[in-house]
Picture (cartoon, rainbow, N blue to C red):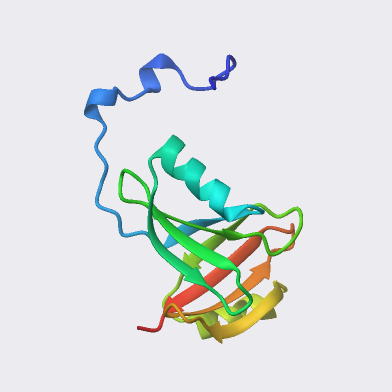
Length: 141
């Protein structure tokens, strides 16, 4: 969908022929929540060309997915943990324990304390003062 009132001028647009996709070394990942993960998976693959590269099922039966985009980027998806939430940002940091302590001291609302995931991350999740959800992690493997 195009906006008629675009703030971009024609001279600022990049020609499609000159665009290249750099190698991905991604440390920030969107995490999308869905009520019907299977239907979302089918749509994301058909409509956007995403490829499912990992699927984990937790003890409570909740599904966690990882998709690769056509350009090599990664996106997480899973079952909604809370009504009304559709996304969270996941950020990988060098020392998640120190990061947790600093965020907590500065007033972040920690709603998931530090823990080791079964898929090789140590992480915690919080909300910032304006209600955005964040998850910070460090790989453990």
